[in-house]
Length: 160
Image (cartoon, rainbow, N blue to C red; front, side, top):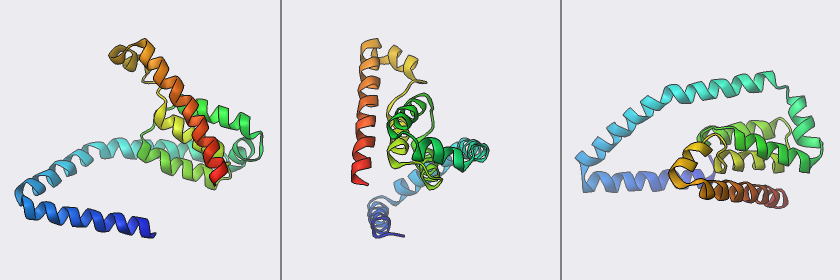
């Protein structure tokens, strides 16, 4: 574990102890509720991880390296961003997926473009967003999110 992760564990434990001292019953009740919530989500999480594993099994690492690694970075970034905009995967699953793609040889810029659009742009949820917030807002938010996702990917390419 790196120092950042250890620091988060320490802070979490300190706040947990403070919470237990302040109101033990309420803290334990919250822990029971969160355990139940996690149990309800566990099947979906395992299913998503299984599908991602299956997908990565059928896509050879050489293809990922060819199309997202050594090929035209600009084109790979745009294609990755479009795929991320269409796909709907929770962020806690997206991060390990992108890590696996990078480990297979994908360049950082297309991988970050995929990740940021995956979490920021919602093509699949556009209709719901349009109904709740209006068409103009939904288009503006998704368009700006797509543009900023590309800019973030480019910035990460420079930084890393």
